Length: 178
Image (cartoon, rainbow, N blue to C red; front, side, top):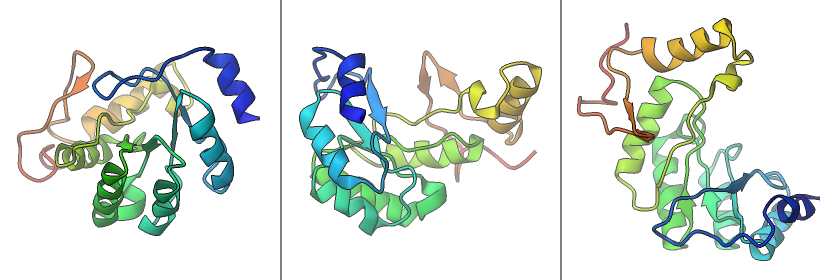
């Protein structure tokens, strides 16, 4: 059960305040299809509950937002589009829910999410691709990660001191395709 796991992993943990970084969250705790369990988890534990990467419409997110089943929504603009992403983020903001987009994809997806979050008040970070995502932490996985994050575009978004820098170029800010 997710509740047992959360309590074992985070005993007596206090949640971060509104200006403190999110140091811990549980993503897809009970699965998007099991909203009742998500509601119970969000109320029962201090660890932030995040979900939504598999939701594809504003209406699906509204069910979680209206019931306060999540502490963090994770829309993915590649799946729901920019208009619905904006709608979800604004509804979450009105409900006091943070937005951390699901984005383990590519330089273009990261650029889209970073630009979208720059226009939102409740977007605090973007899920960033990790080498393990590509199935190999050796030369093959590292090369795949390099291609997806650096070589796909002319001007990849820069990571500085752990923070993605807002692009300054027009459009998504990453230049043309190489």
